[in-house]
Amino acid sequence: DFDIVALGEPLVELNQTGQDPRQFLQGFGGDTSNAIIAAARQGARCAYLTRVGDDAFGAQFLALWREEDVDTSGVEVDPSAHTGLYFVQHGPDGHAFSYLRRGSAASLMTPASLDGGLIERARFLHVSGISLAISTSACDTVFAAIARARAAGVQVSLDSNLRLRLWPLDRARAVLREALCHADLFLPSMDDMQHLTGNDDPERTLDWIRDAGATGVVVLKLGKDGAIIDDGKTRTPVAALRVDAIDATGAGDCFAGSLLARRCQGDDWADAVRYANVAAALSTLGYGAVDPLPRAEQVLAKLRT
Ligand code: KDG
Image 1 (tube, helix red, strand yellow):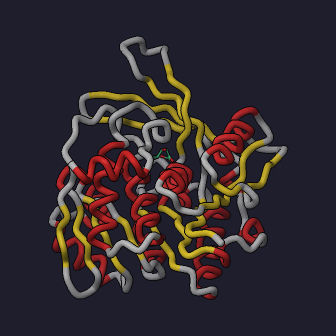
Image 2: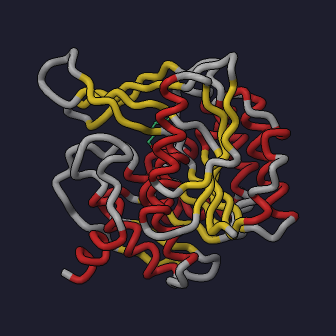
C-alpha cells in the first residue's frame, strides 16, 4: 500500500536567514521527515514512523504530514516528552546545526513502536545515520525495523547522514558498518565517508564500503560533483545540476526521497539519480529543509531544459 515508509526524528527548524542574528524563520526539518515529504512531492505513496511530543510543534508536524499526503497512522504522540528542535546558522563554510533534542519523544521510540505493521506494507523502508544516533533505543528500533523489512521482502534504504554532535565517531563507524550490510540501497555522502574512513578518494571509498560488506546498490553523493552509482558490477558517474545555493539544509534528504520515489515509478538507477540530483539542487534555492522541496512538475521542467 505504500511505496516508502521512513523512520526517524522530525525536528522543528529555526533558520537564521538574515543579517539580524536574532531573527529566525520557523520551518520543519529532521532528515527522514524531509526525505519522506520530498518523496511524497514526487508522487510516491508515503508513511512516516516516529514519535512526537504532545505539544504545539508535534501538532504542527502532524498537520504538515497530512497536508503533504504522508500517512501518520504510525506516529505516536508522547505526553511526557517534547518534539525536538534545531537551529540553522549560515557562515562562509555553509550551514551549521545546533540541537535541542536530548530526551525528545522520537529518541524514546522502541521496537514496539513498529507494531502497527506499516513497514510490511511498503516497498522501501528508509532510515538514516541520524535515526541510529539519537539514542540506544532508537538505534534498536532502526535495527528492528530493518529486520522486519528484510523478513517481509521490503527493500532497505540507508542514508549515512553522519552527525558527529550526536555520537562519537567510533560508535558511528561501527554502527553504520553493521547497518550498511543490511541495506539494499546505501546512500553515503563523500563528506560523511571521509570522516568514517579517513580517505577522500571516491573509488577507494566505494572499495571500503564493499569490503565492509555492502551487497546492495551504493550511491555515493559528491555534492556539486554529482554522484557515483555502484551496483556491485559497474560504477557510473552522474553529473549534478549546478546552482547558486541559498541553503543546502535537507538537500541530501531531498535526494534520497526523490531517488526512492523515482525507483518506485520505474526509473532505472541512472535516471533516478539524474532526477534526484536535479531535485536536490532545486531544494537549495530557498531557506529551510522542507519549504523549498520541489514538486515533480518543477523537477521534470528543469530536466527538460
Ligand atoms: O539533513 C538535514 C537535517 O540534518 C536537518 O533537517 C536536521 O535532522 C536533522 C539533524 O538531525 O541534523
